[in-house]
Length: 77
Image (cartoon, rainbow, N blue to C red; front, top):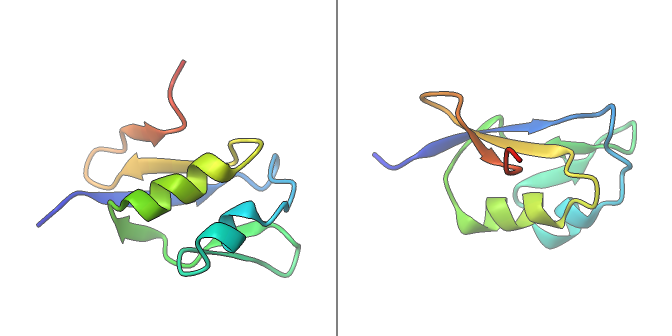
């Protein structure tokens, strides 16, 4: 079995730009509050999910390893 990621959106900083949903509608959507929502709380580690997270202008999307909780994105500076 490959790596799995937990997908989290911090609604306190999400500005609802829709870039994640526009670039990867299979992984993200805008919810009723016009904030990003992951379509699945846990996903297989895929480049498309990482790319969508990277498009967020305010880094509101976090990806963590499902098994350890280790942060994958955004980078821990």
